[in-house]
Image 1 (cartoon, rainbow, N blue to C red):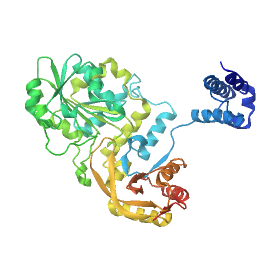
Image 2: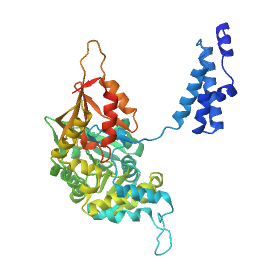
Image 3: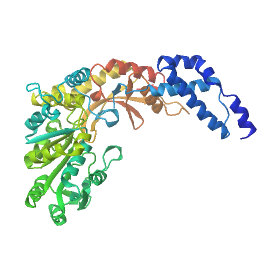
Image 4: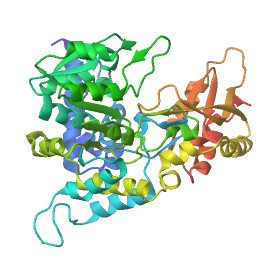
Length: 465
């Protein structure tokens, strides 16, 4: 070790001196002294290493701030944000906001004991699936249903239980990658099934599926392209053709719908999104879909279909590993009840936002622009997002802010966006063509005042209408 490093190491404070610093003492309200002591030791150990590599010793103030920042990092949690992006199902913001009734049901299930796996009538052990299976079957027309923790695990369970060691035929254009870098072929590989891709990216005919069937084939799988869209010269075998071919060869017809839509999206001026009911009535053996996308509930993977196959899934060892917990199960039941009662549009936030007409967004946008004082209200587009209805937009009105033109001034909009993310609650917006945009469609009732106040504070002096 050099003389420089040796001298710098002597400047490091002791743990006790560091803990006595007022900045670190203030952090004791967040964490216990024992945890803060461990953090102080970790910071000092990191500094010893960097000093031994030739760095200089920071000041006591800087070291104390390192400890407090690390302590604050441990205390960071999921925080409320205002979604002004206009993306209804924003994956990074937790996808579907839930109804008040759903939230209340989840809170009640969390607060105390519940009859999760207890039959109250007989007093014997029951099944958690009994709380939701009849409701799912009623809504979708399926013979049976099973719910797990997310759609990826639902597909994995289905393939592992029915197709392990066998071939599953899928269109090359449907071997997609979903959020977080997860790819359908990788899920299939983990299940033990062998992926057989047929057709091309833009064209897959039913004859392509037929030619790929061998004695080792177990299933034909359709994966709905819910997070991308191919335009131009395209042709894909329909679900009805796939089901008919599977029945002819005594194979399973599996349908991964992804978004889990139960309502006709064409009613709201959107492209048609395949519904669960349609897939069931067409004859799919199993249909997989999500709970937190267009369904509008908590994260879950829902499987509906033929009763003998659902029973196989229930008995598979993996079912235990991917089972849904009591809190999300309670919320999912309440979300589905909104559909059963015919009140999804009025109660489920996702459908409230989708069904909101342009006139309502215009009134709100113009009021925001007037109160902000340095903005205009202009027509624009909202997105569905969340791996649902790719390319589909809804007409909306936006609040638009532009930078003040100053010679030599650096771009201010990215800085404003960053500062809005640091407010409490954080305001999340978007920039397009040198304009900061705020979309009322995705801002929940009761959030207007906080949004307007934050925007006015953060744009002062640097934004013009």
